[in-house]
Length: 429
Image (cartoon, rainbow, N blue to C red; front, side, top):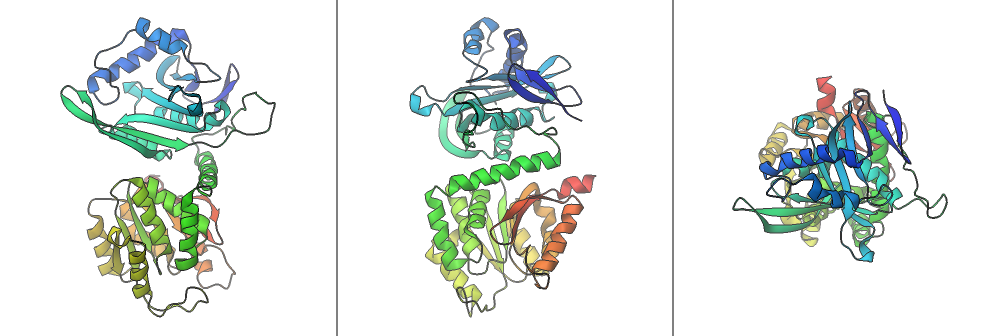
């Protein structure tokens, strides 16, 4: 169970272990400094080379404001176990809507969800603070923090090679950022809006609710960007998917930390969208597309040779070298073997299913390679009951949802199901 604690004008979630997130006060500073200083010797989190003091940090602490650039602590049983602060990204007025955030967790409470809860709260509260973008400055060798930020939709916005020296070792700095929903327009002018908070923020249904909203905000953002026009052209030329689905494929491929596997590439619309996402991520990611070939009669995208047109289209968009194309049926042993060989030790962060009705079969073929939380895009979910593709597809997806292996996050376009893979958690339970 969760209940709520009121602190000043903000509402925060409190869990059964009495963990709350509240505004920090000066009496919290000793605990805040202890948590901070514990990270200094690790050379992983902060650029400080020597421990700091309460006196040295007091002016920094007093620069924060609960209604502007707040400072929060996570508290459990009266003990401060973590903290997060907002600060100005740059002093010029044009950057007022962008804030830098820092997250620190007591070493005894790491990997217990404290950092996740703080980061989730920052994203949810940002619009009410007038903040439209959040950035975090993270060392390139700090993999846990990079993965945490990626999990909450942050992308790599900047990279500064070898700009820090820690004990004579040159280290890279990564700028992680994400846009936040715009400030709500209703309510008294000039009064901060209270963020919508669910009573069970860690429950799967609440987590899914927040992710559904995030996906909608993501689409709102991309519809105003040049990528929308580019993918609209791809949709008209090469895809039967809705442009919103192509935008989400682009986004998932751009932001995921694993590889991308597409089953049923057809003539390349979704493949090209994923390739554009990999390209714009600035990172090396494997993109594997499975297509058995054949012919299709269609008034707009009819083809006598799917594989020939697929290869031509990938080449025309200059992404063919980014794609490992495997010719065959997804469930054939030789195809499964080829996918595993192409992946090597990597896992799948995005799975696109746009083939025949065997959705559950295909998922079972590759489930051992799916990351927990892998993005899933499954087409042909909806349709007439007599539809030979949609009815079996819907039955497969619904059965996996009921088993807790899939987490639904919405329906996009005409008939595409979007969600996440939760199979490992379901198996453990």
